[in-house]
Length: 263
Image (cartoon, rainbow, N blue to C red; front, side, top):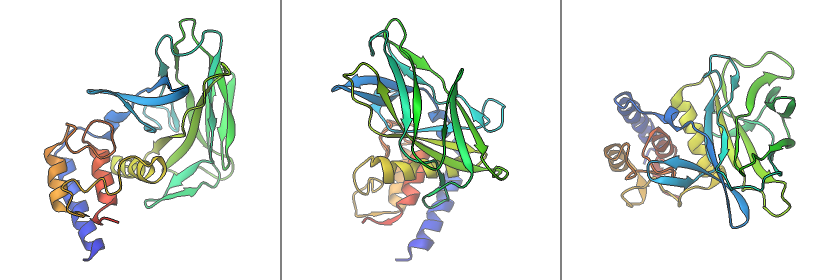
């Protein structure tokens, strides 16, 4: 089987199909929902089917009209999640990485600054400490950090897709930090490329879904029949590959990346 030829054919089919579908992964940009479960901080998303555990999130630099800046995704914990008077914060668990179309690679001079009022933390080539903010009097916690992309050296690349790996923690001395989670930032690249990066992170870092989860008809390979199933289930949970509750462009990208025989 010529996997490259089949992959190219699949990509052409997906591109044509996507052009007919108005919804896209841009609709996936929202606050990260925070809870405490089994003594640890957890991250999830709010879907039409309810809360779904999730560890890969997306954002677009420039969406507010300011280049190389975004205050999304936000973080929101409902009232009663944390102890009033304590603090909740984040740490960067790995250096900033860039998606090259196939995988992630270390950045050069690119940096992302996360800031809130006078507090800031720069995510560079290595893991770095973040900062924490006061929990609200009702035990809730709703914050939007400012994320700014910049270069520590030469001129910033005109476009790129960047990935940060974070954890959330509470200062109550009891709650364990969250499992690692990732934010995939798009800086002026196409939604298709952004979706592909999200799918790569989900498959290779977050480990979401069973092996060969794109094989929707369970015939041992990811081929045109699987694509047909996915497209017919668009907007529902019937072809959901990444577990976010909806069949969308991120699932399309995940299927393309898995095209061919299952491992």
